[in-house]
Image (cartoon, rainbow, N blue to C red; front, top):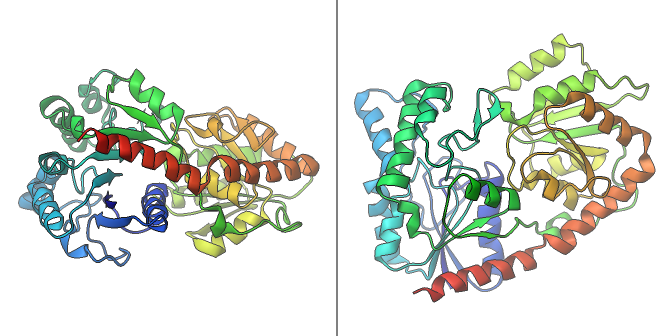
Length: 415
């Protein structure tokens, strides 16, 4: 099959992009052909269809002038440019099915009308809560929020859900009404893929009535090799890796580190970058937490080396995580996870088996779990082995491929 893969970023930016690229890779390994449609960006990976990509736009900075602001608004609501460029690409590269990932804002769902017109089956992997929440996260004022349930998007404006900005929140609310009420544009998707049971159930509970199929993310275990005896847990360290953002619960991790009260020295490495990095560093300094390190953004083998050395990876999230790739990567490296009991995390982190869980936002309970890891090396060794076996048996590439092909064939069968 010729498969059109669509995502607004064509470089390694986060978990969504990992799934986007790895899905294309596993399909290609089974003889299928991948065609890409995305947005132009200086960090993009090499791609033969790059000339058809959407022009680059940075929506996180203020546009210069009223005209540019209006263009950005039009692009978010309904992009004629995206339809035109995708049409040109499809004229040159015919496809059998389209697999969408994150298309909002930089591309826009306007492309669904082109795919429908050409009778191209469409599936879409859900990476967040954008189908029911204008701000993706289902959070308002630092807390989990579900007031948009049933399409009550005016609440977005009242709560200034999008970056605390009234203007951006108004635009986000308008976007939701245009896409879901006026066009019902996502009715052009034949099947939605939910990597976690939690996300599937939450969307249904919020009033999203489209077809959703559960298919967890996968990890290509061959990339990580075998876990050698004595290779892991060689130092008393804990690692968080990912985006440094408010919803990730990193202030709770800093507080828990201060509460440890243990004679054993433990290093906490908060690896990554993001909008609150400077504030986190200041918080750790003011708390006198000299055992917290901020190495910055690390990737590839250098990151895996840090993870392998640690006793456990910590994921203290305070938003409804979906099916985090950071957990799968830790497990593939033979490292257990101390994860918050929120969203899809408990579907992966099984208490006492593949890791430990704690109440999201509860620094005291997180400190207890960290102490347990420090005081029970035998149990940690057991969880390391279980974590690796879990992804090998349940979240491997071949199992994902078979599930995905079944979804593709079902969608194609409609046409």
